[in-house]
Length: 142
Image (cartoon, rainbow, N blue to C red; front, side, top):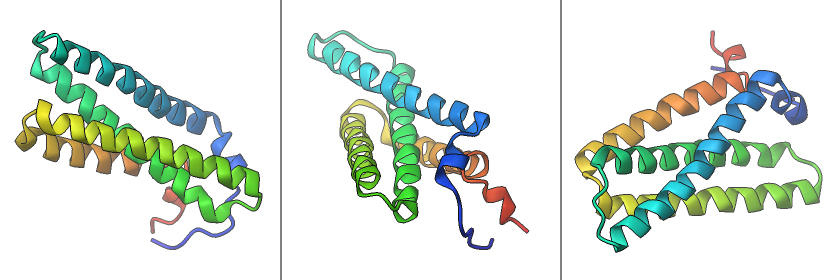
C-alpha cells in the first residue's frame, strides 16, 4: 500500500456510503452504551443474562468505539481549524472512554477465551471495511 495524500475529509465523510457506514457504527456505539447500562443494572439486581447477549453487547461496544476512535484520530493531522480539532479530540476521548469502560465490564462478565479472539477479529474486519468504504484505502492497494 501507498500513503494517501491530500484527502479531503469533508468530501470523504459526506459520501452516502460513508455516511451510512459511520452512522451504523455510531448507532452501534450508542446502542451498546445503553446495553452496558442495562447489563450492569441486571447484574446488580442479580438477574441472569444469557452469555451471548453480554458477549454481543461488549464485543460490539469494543469494536464500534475502537473503529470510530481510529477514524476520528486519523482526521487530526488533516484538520486546519482549531475548533474542529478540539471537537475531534473531545469525540476521540468519548470513544476511548466507551472502549475502556466496555473492556472493564467485559473482563468480569464474559468468557475471555471467547471474547478476546472475537473482539480482535471483529475489530480487524470492521477497520478494514471502514478503511475501504470511508477512507478509500482501495485506492492504495496495488
